[in-house]
Image (cartoon, rainbow, N blue to C red; front, side, top):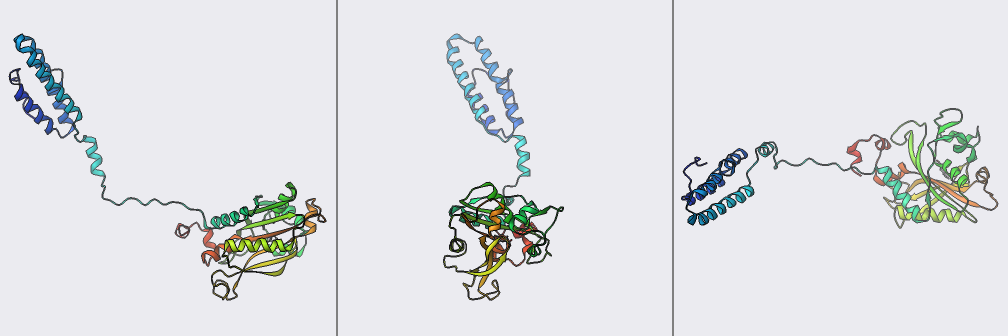
Length: 343
Ligand code: PHE
């Protein structure tokens, strides 16, 4: 910066102008800016001194010279306030920030693959007019077995290895108890699906786990027939798997349905030709179903002479394993993000 000079007078305003403007240009940081401000614009700064001295000059010249000095001062004030120099604190930030470094990847979460399958199944049934219902995972023996036509010592209880909490309470072994809760609370016509988690005391392996998920379905009205069951599940399979999908119905047994069936879906991978997913059979077992047993209707106070219905239950894990081509069910529960982030 040019030396502070006492020699600026109203006679050498041009010299002052060129000095002040070059000083202004040379400011490069905050402390230089402050020195500039004190030197020129402060209480004892050059401009104050100059303007004070106006009183002592020839009144003839005063007007012209005063105007010139004032114009210069306001020019300097505006230029000074507009000037951008790097703030010292900003320089420090600059040193620690390297804009050329690659950014940190931001990991977005996604819905668990089992929940994706659950939602797809649910949405198809919703579009067919079904509602969605839920029930508790800790159930009483009554809902899980008794009301489903499975009294104590019934051999069918052995089909499901139950986790008992006490004599009367257990972790539900299937979503079928929700059928009972729905029928207790609603009058026919009833069309509902019931997704949820179920538990079975099975040995853990690549094929089975101590918990899994099911989607239960229930349709109760006058004149519901086995053909309605077939038609509904065929329509579902075509939407969920493939428009060309065929289904195959085999007789089976469940205490709460009569007749009971198991439904196989044509393998969507090989289209029935036989492959490793369907173990060369061309078919995939996906669900259990049947017509609601009259004893089940009686346990909830629905007259089996007036109403009929069908019910079905499918395992979400099994469908997810098939659909995603996964060979170990345990992967679903390990919360390994390397696995989960693929879906
Ligand atoms: N609850 C049966 C199971 O878990 C499936 C099923 C549901 C069968 C409804 C028939 C009717 O295996």
